[in-house]
Structure formats: C-alpha cells, structure tokens
Image (cartoon, each protein chain N blue to C red):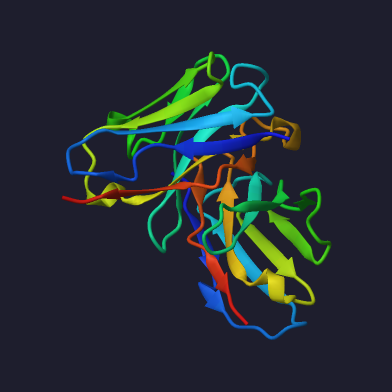
Length: 125
Length: 106
C-alpha cells in the first residue's frame, strides 16, 4: 500500500521560497506510469492542482502558477519536491501530495487514489 | 481551463435521506470525472472514478452517473459518517480542476 507524507516549513515570510517534500513508501517515484502531484487547498476553500511529475522526469504545471513552480524528484530518497518562489499571503494553504491511478482509466490522465495527510503552510510577515 | 460547477454548495438532509449532488463541466469531459469525500482536517478520499465506478471499499450507498458535461453523485440512506464536503474533479485535460465543494451536514 502506497503511503505519502508531506514535510517542510509551516511558516514563511512574504517573498521567501517555499520548499516542500513528499516522501513515498510502498512504491517508487521513478517506476511505472504514475504521476506524482501537488495540490493545495486555501483555508475553507476548494482544491487547486499545482502540478505533477512523471516517472520519466517530465513535469506539468498549472498555468496560473507556472512561473513560480518547480517539481522535481530525488530517486535516492524516493521523494519528490515542490518549490514555489516569491510567496505571498495568497499562498497560505494546506498542501497535499497525491499519486494518480493509471489502472483506473482509459485516457491519458487519471484520478487520484493516494493522498498524503497534508501540511499547512502559512505566509505571514 | 475546464470549469467545474457544483450544486448545491451545502445541504442539511436527515439521516436515511437520499442526497443528490450535481457537477457541471464547462466542456465535454466524457466520463473523466471523479468524486471525493473530505472530512475536516483530513485529505480527500476517492469515492468514484470514471463518473460511475466505485472505489474499492466505498459503501454501495454511494453511486455516480453522467457523461459529457453533467454528472451526479447520489448517496442513498445517508449515514452519520457521511457528514463531509464532497468535491468533483475532472481529469480530461490539464490543468486538472475541481468543483468548489458541497458541504453535507445533518
């Protein structure tokens, strides 16, 4: 059973760079047809997909954040990471990592079946 | 971006009621739609994928239907543990997008 766990700082100041890591157990980030995703949820609001990383190293990003986001992997540690630059109060949110389920679809994109518990990130001066 | 519009935003049924939540996509997404349940302080949990397929372990009182632009999540015989917020999500195209959520309270 795949398990994901987010880690990183919970508090940043405006203009700083957010760096979060998702540790994966029960599966490998560089094996299979999975995509490894970052999703965030502003307090009391809906969910926003940030981007993902495929096992072949290709990344896709939400155009609304693309200029500030980078997702990468560390296969030696079986982790993938999110970098978000120039944060503002609008980036205050719960951040989740998630994996999709290619065995659940017939297209090129798939539903998320495994999520980490999430990490709250607050941006405040 | 594909916009996902859910309704209602909240509802307050009674135990044992049948609950219906709708989700409308701004363009044809075929059946590339999933439904999630989120309880306070928890990550979303997959209930339904490809519009109508039940995730393993999800009670059969949950069902989904629809295709194209109009989708429905149905909860029959509402139980206390079904109090949660429900989200739809399209995976037809990037960027992946979610509905704004429907809060179910008893």
